[in-house]
Length: 429
Image (cartoon, rainbow, N blue to C red; front, side, top):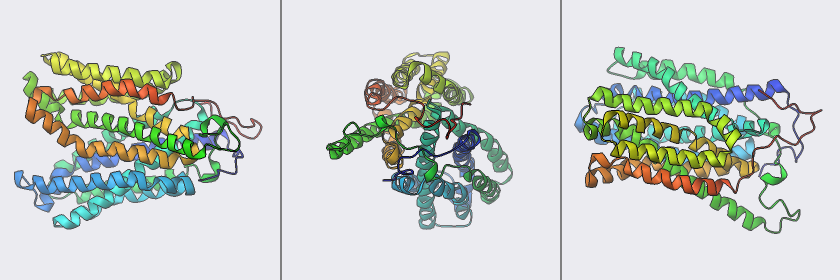
């Protein structure tokens, strides 16, 4: 367990904390950018590997599975290292290395080699995700108010910007993703090195406040073991809820266009608009989510998000018309926008000294949703029909509306750090 300066408050000025905040924004931007670099290059990658058409679906599916498995492992494995060595020493290497890991795929041939690189990509993706969520929580503790949703808004922003670049490259280089992987990867890696220097080091983290330490009410910590067990159970609970959130998001992204086209009877173009509106609503929700959580409380926002998302899924499923389906997708985007940021923030704030371990566990369970999600939705579609696709997200989001606020009650409220103002100036912006 890290001591974070043996309980003494670090001396950081306004500019230093603001730089750490900017670096966190860039980290999420970079993660979204790399994801869209991958998404916009899958066709050229399959062409390079000879996996075109229906005959290549199984090989590409195995590559995607290897990335997913690696990500689930990477999420959890990085956590203890973050707590021991600090965010900068663990997150900065992922900022530099992760964007470059896709390059070997453009020069390999064969399934085994591609899957080996896929596992490496997944490990770094998962480690990146946990490292920056953990760093975001530590920066958030300096501000004493919710700012995690805004960090997560940088993820789709990075995806949008680099998605445009990747799409342009995909139109010109159809047989190989090498140009996209090298040009985008190198630029993002260099920027990662620059912004990585602004991340907080271990000795710059705030020590835990009294109410952030499980069992801290008793100086002798007689219930330390039970407190640790209680925290573990809370993290598993958050992980299960995050799994439901990620599975719901995957259902929309993977099946949303096909659902609107077939269940409502629209054109493929209008059906694609539904997914676009979902993504836009999610981005807008994250922009305003922090202010809403600050005003109404994170617990209420998580519960309300579950209700809004479930209502959107039911509206899309039962509305029977294109306008109502599109409205349902907007509500789904708003409902899912702030769930993950607020739950990950809560997981990190319950025990800041072990924030990396705890967020890693929650993230790892959540990433399992990306692995089991396609199979779960396929079962619903195969047995009930495509028109019932939103049923599973509706059920999961309703459960989050109930379970989320209950878990959030076990986490300390946001508060300004109790440090000597003559030694430490908390950023107000």
